[in-house]
Image (cartoon, rainbow, N blue to C red; front, side, top):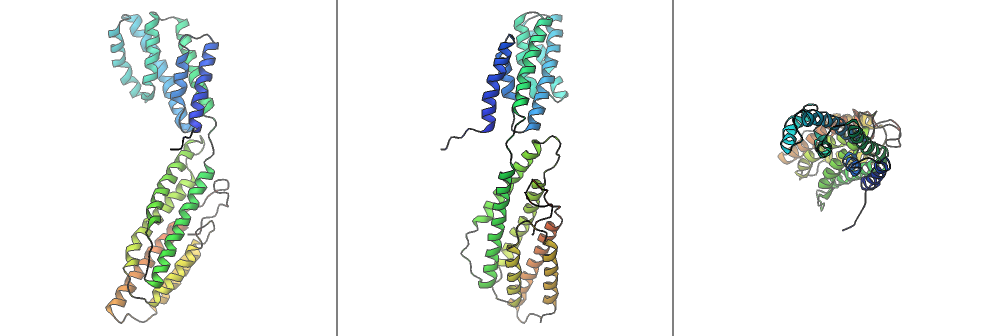
Amino acid sequence: MKYRIGYRTIKTAVGTSISIMIAQMLQLDNFVSAGILTILCIKVTKKKSLRASWDRFFACLMAMAFSSLLFEGIAYHPLVIGLLLLFFIPAAVMVKASDGIVTSSVIILHIYSAGEVSMELLLNELGIIIVGIGVALIANLYMPSLESKLKEYRLEIEENFKIIFDEIVKYLRTHESSWDGREITETMELIDEAKTLAFRDVENHFRRNENLYYHYFKMREKQFEIIERVLPSVTSIALPVEQGEMIADFIEELSEHIHPGNTAIQFLEKLYRMRVSFENMELPKTREEFEARAALLHFVKEMEQYLIIKSSFKGLKDGEMNQSRTAEAN
């Protein structure tokens, strides 16, 4: 198995060491706790790291207040720790700072161990909190760009779409196929992975609430659902008919335009003209021909929806796909 060290691991290792060194240089008691805070606050995205840092910072301040009130008001006794947690944990959950409960428990135990609450002790704990969380936030300012990986997913999905369309064309023309359908399962997995990655990219930008790559992959997902639906109807066609050859030509041209470029409307117009020509053809003479043409008509209607989905996509901006803001082909 290949061993790989990721960016988050490196940042955690370096950040933890730095926070402990800073806390030690500042001569803070329990300085290693700053390293624990850094470990807990470094997340996979900037937004998650900021949320985790805020939760822990606020929860730690609450813990200091609860500790001062109960330890000084009642006694420094293990039973008081239990009583404190009975009030503190629900309060942290109520203010949506539950992620900071574990970290705050460390602060509570520091105060308990000290045996008294003093300004010096509170400032020491505040220093640990600021150093640990601050280093984590600085470390998470850098996040590797996901642009190239998102582009790889886009190209792989488009290539699989093309392969599937080519197989449809082959079957419509020869009514034979040795295709194993591997691209169907593979495309489903690629789309799921790509959407997850695109969402993570949103979480790495504080001023961005959406990601056009995410919308792009959602659009492909809807199109892929249509492809999955039409495959059984296509493979049920056993009789060669003229309409099948015309549709094969259309799909072949369509498969060559799965790339950036605003041509979805053009293909919808071609599809409409083809449907009109179908209506002007002679009626089927046999049951087999009727069933074949009915299946092909169903396929054409589904492909119309496929193109409408693409035409409604607003496109991708410069820098997110290194292309113009135009929509993609199909």
